[in-house]
Image (tube, rainbow, N blue to C red; front, side, top):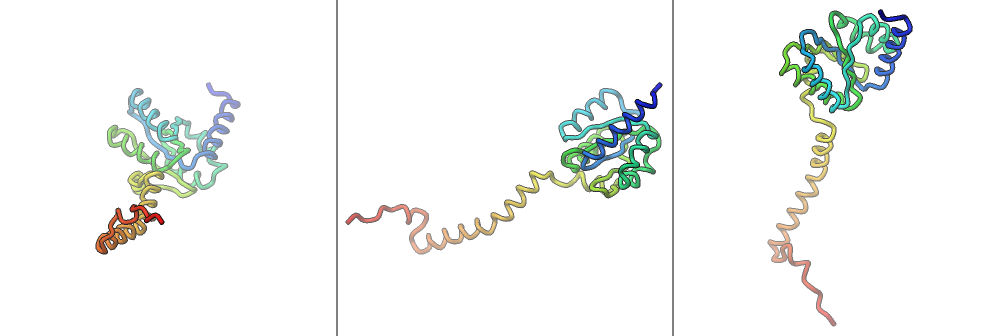
Length: 176
């Protein structure tokens, strides 16, 4: 039997986790084996996320401090639910959940929230297809470097056409 103090502590813990998280997802884990849940928790931990099984009534009370989350999750809180808190990249968490749901078809991603915006199933699947932050940075850097690289190649070809080439600037100057 959970005491009132334990319930208040649990509500406070859930509220703090929502405050720190950049995004969150509601998943239905009914029918998943214990070793599969353990495997999912390890994968989520690698993605800077955590899964917490919560009682629906306590979660709904914790939503009161976060109105955007309350509007996104109020209809999803039926049955056996767990909340996945994403502290790092939200798309990495969505990708981990989507990949795991492909392997274990029993897992259902009910809904999500990111930056105060509710995410339905289609948005979560799209979010899971996006590249990570590091990959996006690399793509952006390549885009920035492309004109300079093309200019350097053109100048090198023009120098070779004039007879100089890449070795033209390396000759020693005559001594006086």
